[in-house]
Image (cartoon, rainbow, N blue to C red):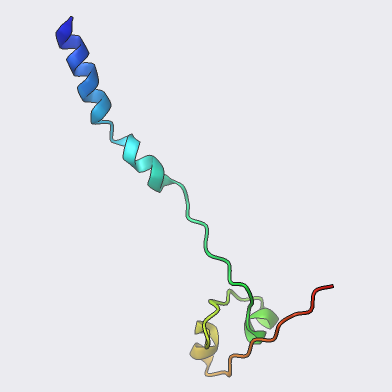
Length: 70
């Protein structure tokens, strides 16, 4: 009987799914607090940098204008 108890502990410790559970959930992307004018107008994902990737790729001036809350 003692050999059965030892094998059940070994299989429990070597469970490959125990560590994968943490990584199996999809990451939620960080939300940018404000999109630039170009990304807002085209409904693109803005990365929020001083010159975002979309504006940099197109050679546009990247401007951020705060929207007024209603």
